[in-house]
Length: 371
Ligand SMILES: *Cc1c(COP(=O)(O)O)cnc(C)c1O
Image 1 (cartoon, rainbow, N blue to C red):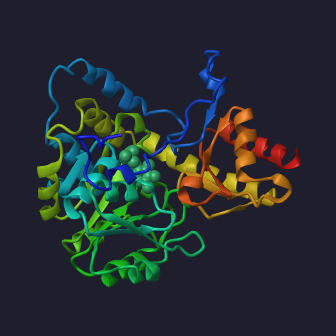
Image 2: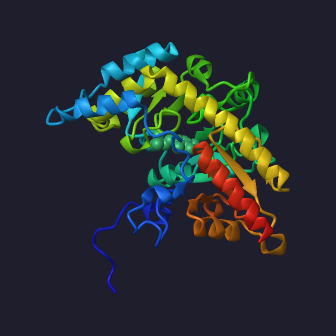
């Protein structure tokens, strides 16, 4: 066969396409009864979207013939007000995934290395490879970011460090002092991207999403999302707080209308719905605890998750592997996330759903272990 005439840049075809959590089970969703499938695979909001966001979506739908505000000014102002930030240093994207990609494209390329942690979010190596850079994974310790290992993996080719804190899928985090130690140990010309997608769920005194690290220099960015606690994953809306020099760069490379008018309006409304936010937060914290406790009582190991999901290990004794547990759960119409792609084949990640869904899931796992 002759070589194709049109070929992508080197490295693109080495990318393993990102595979999201399933939302269907074959044979289970054809009966029109979609609600019978329990989906705990993508860390989505347990309660559906905020009613206020839904109202804003319906209202804005009337004017979708109009282009959105390309600068998302009202949304930047609302985010700035909520978090006490300068709106001019906020950039929004079609999900924080888009912002992570734009950062990789803008600050790394062929010959450069992009560093992340061993079981870090899969978008980091994807974004690095798409930019032509080489992703480099630093080992974790006890499924937790190891600052010394990250610093030890830095070379003169390192351009970006992507760190999810808390991390998905491990649910673990490093303290604000460890984060400071990482920033202080990195060369000043290495961009640190703190992905704080789950920041709102963390209730630990020694945690910081990283605002102050962004403020203290010109080389740190913090990304956030409306997909998790704000429950708007389907709309694609994320944001980042960054030094003005970096905001200027991203504003040059992003699509001029990268955030839809509906997403902008829904984001503003979701920020205003404090009751929904608090309810979601308390629910996740409570059910992470309850679920981890229940799983540990069954003899399973879990991490200490501070996200809206738990990571549970199946040791494989008597055939009780993670793969077998996943198959059993699917047979019972429950979808969780297998972790092979994250290098964690013994684990399943279970997102926090409603009380009924969580009880159904833990009951099914208990039955599986006894089967
Ligand atoms: C879910 C998630 C995101 C958010 O992605 P969006 O593109 O904003 O939906 C980012 N980082 C991590 C670690 C995540 O788990």
